[in-house]
Length: 205
Image (cartoon, rainbow, N blue to C red; front, top):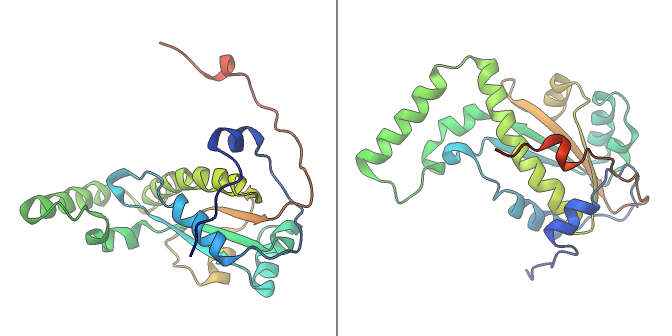
């Protein structure tokens, strides 16, 4: 498949991006979604564990159910696509051979696996979920910027019942749900972002 060129460079996308809650009914091509997701999955991850997982929701009935789980937010149902970002550290730890670099072999490979397992064995379940969610927010930032760069509007959402979302999608009970993202071609300009100046939030030492 021929690659789709982004509409905007990274800096322009970052400066231009704003939350969009109204979308045209045009479907988002699956090829474009795959291209954006492939790029977003290059986000950095500690130990390369990549505990993030994504459910791409396009089915109207499923979006309707997710809207109810998201306290009635209309754009969850009306957006052409909703991404459910979830974190599953247990799955990542169960498949360490997938994430440890293939160049690391033999005793070094086993030592690395044991070091990772020891680090997380000392954590409780909630701490593990929080760690995996923190990793997933890095991916979320990449994803929002890429959607903007490719001409798609989006809005990340943290207001929802995670247990209901897991039940609707059949996700494991131990998973965390860091965010939902509604997306599509914008039918509005949205509101300009108001941000604190650099001097207010950046310290130089």
